[in-house]
Amino acid sequence: MLNYTVTSNHTHLLVFSEEGVTALPRSIQLVAGRTAQEYNQRKSRKGAFWEDRYHATAVDTDKHLLKCMPYIDLNMVRAGVVEHLRE
Image (cartoon, rainbow, N blue to C red; front, side, top):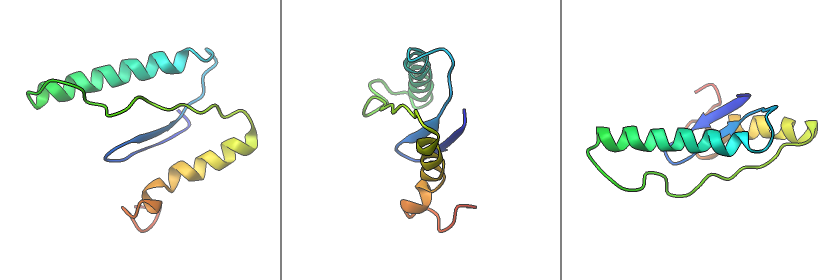
């Protein structure tokens, strides 16, 4: 994992994998399934946990990578949740 942020309604993950394009969907499926199971058990509920499936974007150049890092870092600032990145 290169970078991440977790908000109340979504997450941003920046990951690197040498395993090819199939590694990410399998990993996300595992994490999403387990998270939903745990939450539903804790809250004594059933049904869907995630509103929508994940959206993956391939980062294939250094320039794109350098744009992704601050985008993720500043997500909560842009959303107005915090005033500064250090928060």
